Image (cartoon, rainbow, N blue to C red; front, side):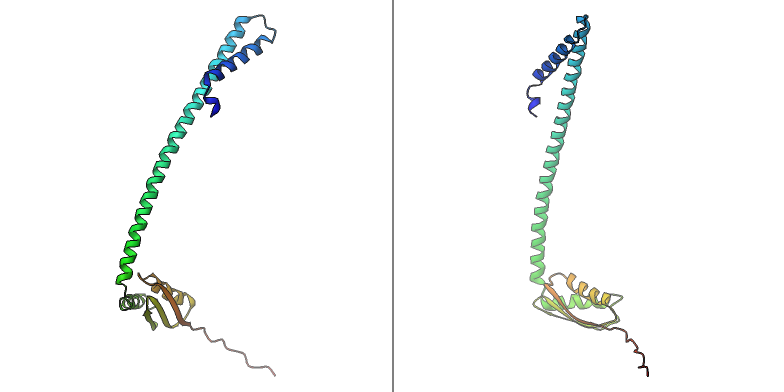
Length: 173
């Protein structure tokens, strides 16, 4: 960034270096050396101008992105505040009786779980599940359904998983 503060000096210096380097080559044609130096000066000047334009464009892009980021952060904070208000409202309405009804209905309406007797009890927002299912997937599904109900603080599962009986071979004699 510091070299952009004095671009005219930089250009003049690069032109002077080009002239001096050409003068030291021992060429007799001073006019050709001067023209070459001027071309170098123009090229260096254009390079500085191009670089400056790129920097300005990138700074503008960075400023725009920063503004968008700040807007997104404000929107996120606002959404989090709104979510907190809604959760507080749900918690106030989510009595144990209401939670029991919501969870029991969800368990009974689930196609895979409707065949199994899973009992739910709710105390102070904590759901206690009891029953039997044939595999761990269904056990976890019941826990997930109960835990997804709004206002549930936690889920304690006492659902037993029935494992198929494995026949043991008779002892050999």
